[in-house]
Length: 170
Image 1 (cartoon, rainbow, N blue to C red):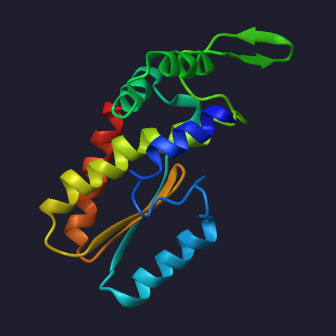
Image 2 (cartoon, rainbow, N blue to C red; image 1 turned 120 degrees about the horizontal axis):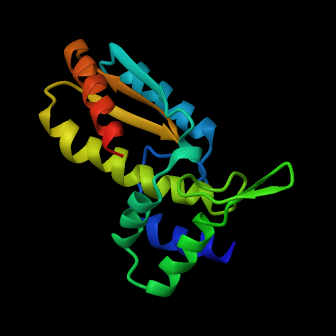
Image 3 (cartoon, rainbow, N blue to C red; image 1 turned 30 degrees about the vertical axis):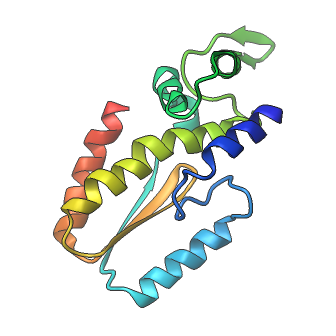
């Protein structure tokens, strides 16, 4: 829990406003309210709805550690997080080592997921996707589920293609 609070103190200020999952004072209802506000008040004609399949089971540890190093320089803290990630799993009384994913039910897993998706999805969308668009677009994310609202069909389709390429890299 102490690590969770430290990571939240470091990263919470960086997370985008339309990221809602597992964040202090935010809920799925807030995400739905924002989605409703956007759809009802801006020119949205197309919605891309995504759920990253088996996300928590497949998070790449190396990439996650790279994301954490964006804001954390303390090697002891990074080493501790690395140990948490490599803690392994127990299935039917047998221990299995892990080299990917975040421990299911682990108190750190949600905040680590937010850090990872902040860098590989949220920032990618803001820095690379949005500047290329001519119509309205907005990403709303709740953990590994997200929707992107678009004004233009061609931009929604191009985004879907680019998203597949982006996720393949991570």
